[in-house]
Length: 117
Image (cartoon, rainbow, N blue to C red):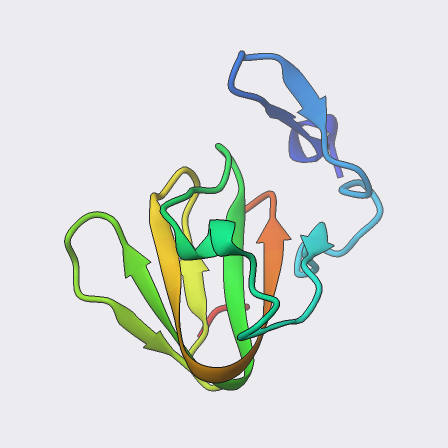
């Protein structure tokens, strides 16, 4: 990959290198969260927050369901193992626990084309 693909500008306009971007497949996340359940899901994710600029995320539900709420007034989405959630860069959102759940979040430095269904 070229340096353009492995480096991104941060909020100050400075270029930053994403570790491993030059050696990993474009279909792989650069980082994944631990698997969270209803008790271990961080409170910060249940409040309004956002990813950084140039960071996409996929919320993968391994078991159960989770409500994904964008802060733009649109209808919440119910996420389940067959229907993950796509988080766009700098998009304000939060999640709501609806019962027992196992969830993992994948982070990408590009739009995860072909990985989100």
